[in-house]
Image 1 (cartoon, protein in one colour):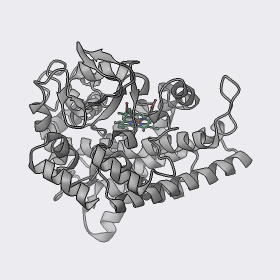
Image 2 (cartoon, protein in one colour; image 1 turned 135 degrees about the vertical axis):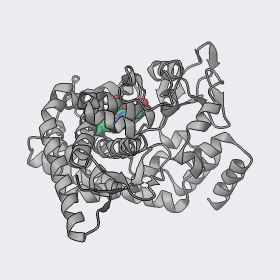
Image 3 (spheres, helix red, strand yellow; image 1 turned 120 degrees about the vertical axis):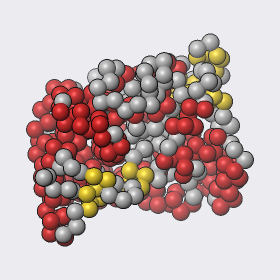
Image 4 (cartoon, helix red, strand yellow; image 1 turned 90 degrees about the vertical axis):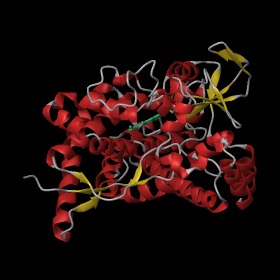
Length: 427
Ligand code: HEM
């Protein structure tokens, strides 16, 4: 593994853009200038590992095409990393993004899994959760204020105290998993999140395995308990459910579905809250505009998702020989769709590098992907983001950045691991 990482590092030094994309910490902080260098390559930039597109229309076409299917991490890894994975062995416990999770399968399984849980995420169901989400936000803000007052230190890590806690609390209540488990879920989730990335060391792989095993074991046990004593929650409704053909979900299908919804529920919205806060710090005039025109909040949330999306990119593999924008793509070829870059396509967004909370077509971003796998939790995420950020900035109108922040070490999930803020008292 040392050799493999050394080989990738050599490629980084030699200017291999794919390798830089995967590993270079500078790229992690600000990948946008690099993506702009790829803008002239239409429809694809050709890299060593895959075709890559930064174009909104191309990404949309690929994500919506029946000629392309989903991939999952063990398929996407480049050859040297694949050898490393083979050495370490394939994960024994499927993670939330490996089959049979809905995110990692195509039709006919995909619509079958998705239909089972989609009812819980409609606009109407989400609207009914707004009040409870707002209560959770106020309670977390109370706790954060109290802790700051008691310690006499007004500087707190917003991710630890707020951004990470709100989504995990909301999704846990929806699913009916005990909120007392939230810290444990966050720890397991952190350990498993690297499973989205490539080129893991042996140690990172082993740690990811342990975390995935812990998540699987806990969920398996929890679903067994629900089978005996169902509650009034989403997972209880799934247990023992039969689909249209009269076949129930297998235990692993059930566990994977539950783990995906749980993890998707708390690994992404945290990034929206952190990235959004950071954008408001960076653009004080936009922050003032929001304070003066609070009806802009829903648009502002979409602009945050466009400008600095919580999921940077995804990928699809051609199932058959096909073409995209007149360019042939052979069966088996991988196309990386860079959502973060498509969101800055100048042919869709005027002055795409400007952060504008009143942008008329902010909603046209691809932060939630497109096509069959369009984010199931999009309405929930938008509602949580709006409730969380609005409550935060209304309670602390003078909230300020306090010292260096740190990005999460993951390359596909894009957010902050640490975002220190100062809870300036209102004057
Ligand atoms: C799928 C982004 C929040 C549940 C996806 C995909 C993206 C995404 C990009 C599709 C990936 C692909 O096409 O390969 C986000 C962002 C969020 C967010 C940016 C927050 C700001 C949530 C929440 C839930 C959720 C709160 C709640 C349960 C799901 C599920 C899928 C999914 C279940 C799989 C859908 C399918 O495969 O059919 N999300 N998500 N997401 N998301 Fe989200």
